[in-house]
Each structure stands twice: as structure tokens, then as C-alpha cells.
Image (cartoon, rainbow, N blue to C red; front, side, top):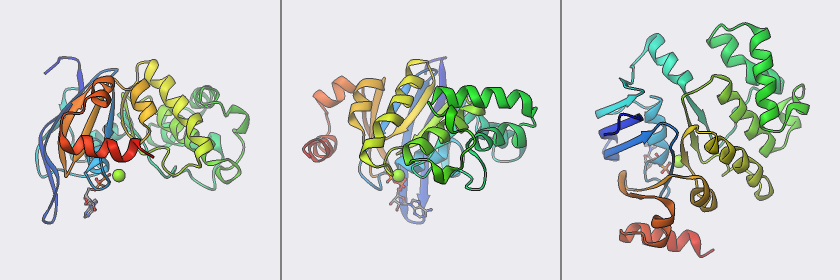
Length: 247
Ligand SMILES: Nc1ncnc2c1ncn2[C@@H]1O[C@H](COP(=O)(O)OP(=O)(O)O)[C@@H](O)[C@H]1O
Ligand SMILES: [Mg+2]
């Protein structure tokens, strides 16, 4: 195991009743690494993400983040959640708060940081995701792509050590997918540690260091993207790729 590992899952198992949704999963994500997780619907990708910031407890095995086992509760858990940002398919912005307030609320309410300091950081982040000029609008006034970029800025405002993305572009109209992937690609280039569940194979090819293929709760194979797409080893990965790459 590399000393530089930020996220480490060892022999992780998770059941929902009789359903074995994470089946002896071993995965190590290095600092600055971008791991794209792909696989059929129901294979456990979302559960994997949720387990990493402990939105889902696991039944056995261990997960460590930055050298420490995931805390179960209390302030340590709150700190973990602020260190592991999460971006979901549904943007989950507060509808009655402005874009700027949405980005500021975590640092101000959870971290008790001073508003003046958070304000400048939030504006810089909105600049970075290309929507500083929308800061005083409300989420409903923005397009889906813009709202998802706000959600990314909001996650970054907590200054996380890693970001998890669970199908961040799946709810978007096609013309808005690119603007969100561009922001994610820029974060990847800047060295953010990222675990990204996505069906965007272009992003996987160009931005990922590694592609992980899941099926039936198992991590079936993993490889650098060029190798994975050129010569998937398992029949399940071959079958999955033939289905998604032919239409
Ligand atoms: N809270 C839950 N209770 C029971 N079953 C669940 C729950 N969440 C997910 N599942 C089931 O666990 C399996 C894996 O789900 P999920 O991690 O969402 O897969 P994916 O994100 O790859 O589509 C699916 O069969 C799903 O129906
Ligand atoms: Mg999912």
C-alpha cells in the first residue's frame, strides 16, 4: 500500500438485507489521483461513494481516510464530511438562498469561519467555475449546468482533501454536460483527489488516472483508461463497454 494513499478500502462488505452490495472491495486512492468508477446500474457505485464519507455504514472491513479509520459519529465525523466533498446527480442547492449564500453556508455554519473571509473565497470559487456574475441569483434562475457548477464550488468552499462525484452530469441536458466536465477536468489537472462515478467515457479517457469497473458489488477490474478501454479483461467489462460505446 502506497504511503501516499488518501482513501483506502480493505475487504469492505456491505449488505442491504440479503443483497451483498459491496463484496470484499479493496481500493486505494492516492493523493492527487483521479479514479473513475464505472459499471452497470445497481452494481454498488453509489454505495461505494456513500461509504467513503460514511453516509452508509459498512458491515465489515475497514476504510481509512488520510491515515485514520472513518469516525462513526460526533465531531470527528463532521470533520470527515467536510474533508470529503460530495457532488450528487441532483444538485441539492438551497432554493431560498442565493448562489453566494449556498457556497458560503458550509464554512460559516459548520466551520464557524468569519463571513468576510468566506465571502472572498466563495467569490473566487464562483469565478473559478465561471458563474461569479450569477452570485446574487437564486438556484431556480440558473440552468442545470450552472447549478451543478455551484454545487462543485460549494463543495470546494469547505477546502476538502478529496471530492466524490456520483453521476454529476446524469441529470443534465446534453448541451450542459461539457461545461460541468470542463470544471471537473480543471480540478483534476490541479491535483484534486477525485472519485468519479460517471458514464462519460470521454472524461474517463482524458482525466482519469485509473478506471475501476464494478459489477454485482465487486470491483472486477481496474486499469489506466487507455489500457482499460483498449483491452478490458473480464467478460463483464467487455459486455458493459460494448453496450455503452455502441450508441
Ligand atoms: N438504502 C437501500 N436499501 C436497500 N437496497 C439498496 C439501498 N440503496 C441501494 N440499494 C441497492 O443496492 C444495490 C446497489 O445500489 P447502488 O449503490 O445505488 O448502485 P449503482 O450506484 O451502481 O447503481 C442496488 O441493487 C440497489 O437497489
Ligand atoms: Mg448510483
